[in-house]
Image 1: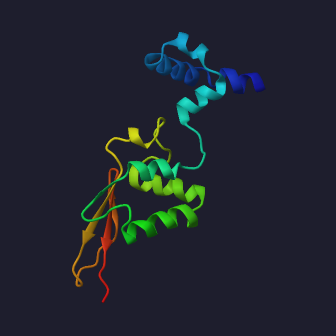
Image 2: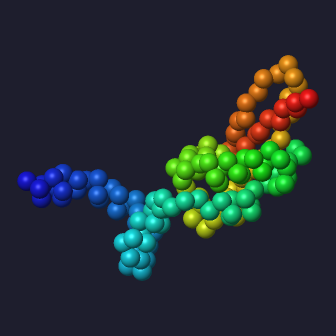
Image 3: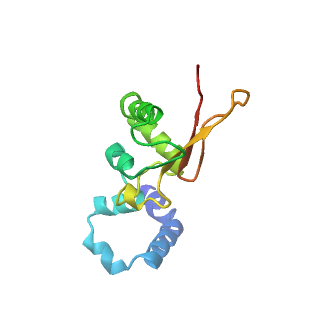
Length: 142
């Protein structure tokens, strides 16, 4: 019974997976990798996000810069207040992917950017995102 469930019942799906993998990977190359390395290549790993690398490769626009008060607050919250899972959710919010690029954030295309958006006192706006662009609203308080 177990043999039927594990092998026979999933035979068609396994063949489709192998066929798809062979269409993008030379089968001879698979023997160069240990099983855990293949797992990493296929689905990445769930370690914490390298925030140093992310901050190193972020681009700022609209008056923002790395030492801007709002940007310092943002990174402080992400670093100190967010859990590893919340950092992955933040990354997913700004890039649509919960895992960093395999070779680091320098390979993120387009690069992660944060732009300052100003609104007048009578407008209400929230931070929003487009692909790899986080738009943060700056409210001026007297």
